[in-house]
Length: 109
Image 1 (cartoon, helix red, strand yellow):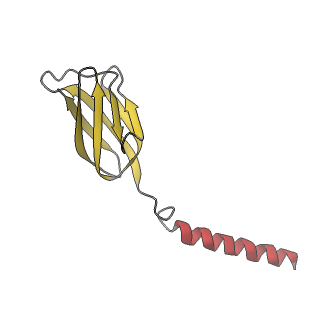
Image 2 (cartoon, rainbow, N blue to C red):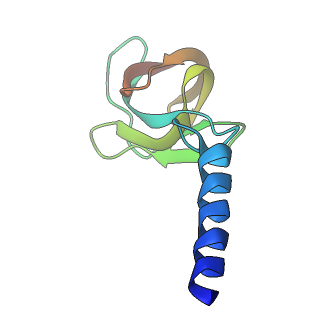
Image 3 (tube, rainbow, N blue to C red):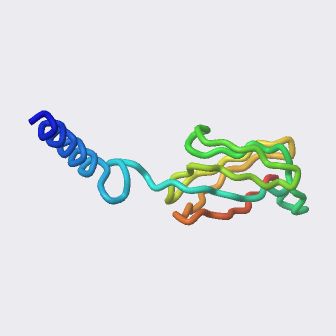
């Protein structure tokens, strides 16, 4: 009898989890992916190291390496604004983030 009661509770719990998560994850969860890119100076194509690249109003950030390359993990898919701040200049751009990841080039002036 007790075993049947535990199985019933477990079944109800699993049904709740199945409904709440659905086939594509938790309800309301956005698709997220990684964005990799390079920051360069607009006129010379010189790569910019130590620049701060941000998305989601600064909630997602990355710093470029010595080659000007960055990766932001957990970026939402779709049209996103990306901002760059560096000693060489700053910029913002709207980019299209795809589910399989995106590669972008950003230019500061």
